[in-house]
Amino acid sequence: MLICIWYAINFTISAVVEWRFVNPASYVLWTAFFLFESLCLFILLIFLWAHWLFKFRPAIQIIGHVSGIILFFLVMGTLSYYFSDYLEGFVYFEHWTEYMLMMLSSWDALRIHDQYIITVGVYYVIRYFQGLQRQEHEKSELAIHNREMQISLLKSQINPHFLFNTLNSISTLVNSSKEQARKLITQLSDVFRYALDSHTGDMVKLSHEIEFIENYIRIQQVRFGDRLKFEKAIDPSCMSINIPPMILQPLVENSVKYGIGPKEDGGTISLIVRRSGSIIFFEVKDDGLGSNAKKVMDGTSSGVGMMNTDLRLKSYFGAQSHLRVRSSELVYSVSFFIEVKDQEAIVKEYEKQIL
Image 1 (spheres, rainbow, N blue to C red):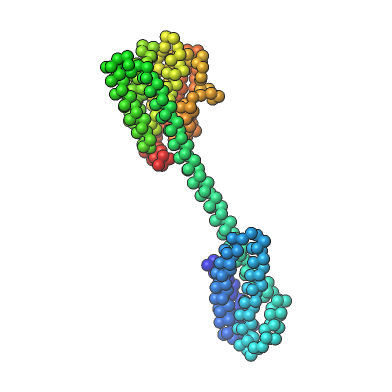
Image 2 (image 1 turned 180 degrees about the vertical axis):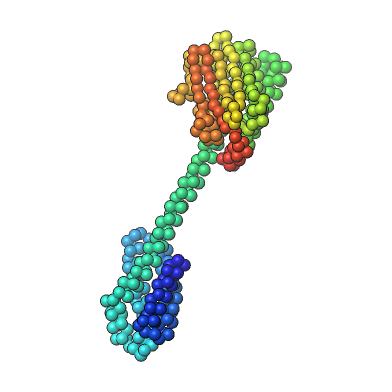
């Protein structure tokens, strides 16, 4: 359409100038109009021709367009001959040949060739930008797909990792006391239910995550007894915020497995959550083996759960929400912060990533 508008302007100007200053006959305007109509029809046909040729390799396309230029010149030249010479009585083949040779040696031939070349050029420009858009769309879809795969992978790695360790913890204790075993099974069922529900893709209240952590600690306390203590200092205003499920469990598990468990006299795990404006600060620390632990997340070595938690935080809340590790001989601490300025937007973004 844009090409036709462009040539409509050209044909109008040239026809009016010829009619006004060269030949005042009305057929000059009618001839220009009919040639313009024919050109618009051929522009459509040239687009279809170029679209069909685009399926082939470049050499075939070049041959096809050279043939197209020749055919286009013959057709448009014949139409011009019909409206100018044929209607004047020059109806023989010799007249047509003479007219075409004369046109071929004039600027008219270049103008007709340009019409074909410009049309094909516009087609290839359109195809080029369509290709760029398609690539961007494919990249975007691939990025979304990879992100969904990553999130699914992270969750599938965390949940079995947690469940295996929990089952392993109670397997040696279930026969020691029936009452204790029944209580432990109830706690374990709550843990299982929470772990399985985390696959729904919904954010959870911090209060639910804390309850889950407490159940996990109670199960571990059956195994470690008085050697494992748990303390929490949580700002009450933070209990209603939404966070991804099972985001704290790998941090607590890391403290149990590498900090408190191997220490002969055990120790205390502390969970701290406090608010500063729209920033929520989380910290899990223990006074176990600290930097003397066999495995410490210092950027070079870490458990799968810890690494995945770090990646999940970055995916949901941005790169600034990565895990920060501090360790000494007495204390091992893992902390992170999230911004909940627009909690509703965070929840929607999380649901979009999961779903």
